[in-house]
Length: 91
Image 1 (cartoon, rainbow, N blue to C red):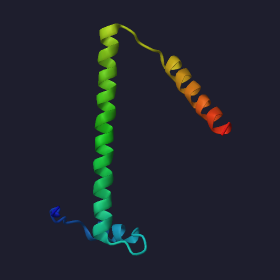
Image 2: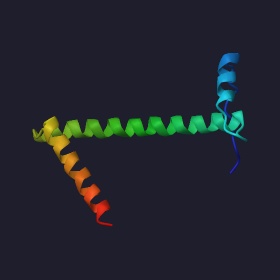
Image 3: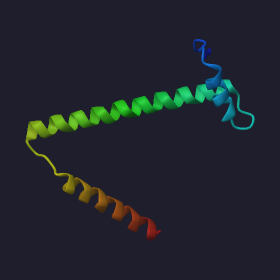
Image 4: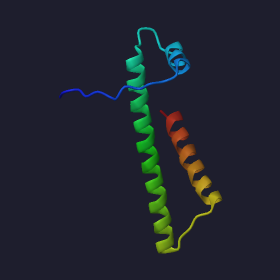
């Protein structure tokens, strides 16, 4: 597969210096920018999926009339967490 380029990015010298100051040993500024771009894409996709699930949940609650209190939800999450912790301890 051929590679593609990202448009050049003009930034203040201070921003470039800040980015260069956090580079890991052997890491290039280009690699840092690419990794940052990938992380931001992943974040936005995850965020969009989270919002979509929330909207679907709202639509289902409105359709069925079944709503759960925060106490019920937190109780269920705590039960799930306790079960996983118990499972982990038994291994």
